[in-house]
Image 1 (cartoon, helix red, strand yellow):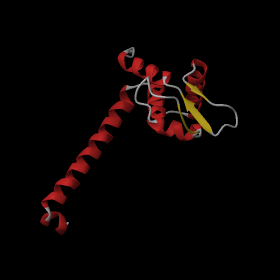
Image 2: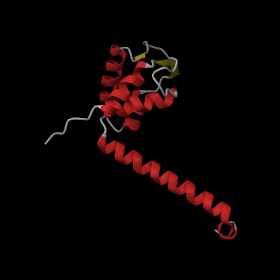
Image 3: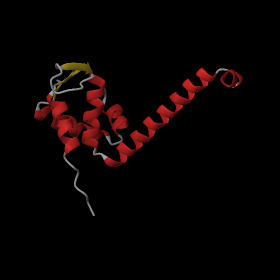
Image 4: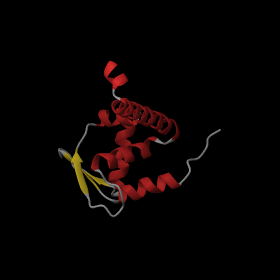
Length: 124
């Protein structure tokens, strides 16, 4: 703490890092409350595959177990399984039994972007 008091540049860098980290946590909490699980799963897969546009090349990521994905998404493993099967049937992803890789297709980005633009129905 004494070093932070003496070094203004270091103190500013630490404060900026802490503020950015807290902002990221708040954004994650807001997203968790306002977006559907299917969209969050698509976003996580896109982040893992570093796909940032629909014209990105197809990429592969190591296959994660569904329990880990469920924890990241904030839902149950059975729902993640259902979403992954839906993604596979739609051609957004590809994986086979025993495969150690998950192939992400650029069409997953289109699905995710479409979900961003389409408002979710409000249930009363």
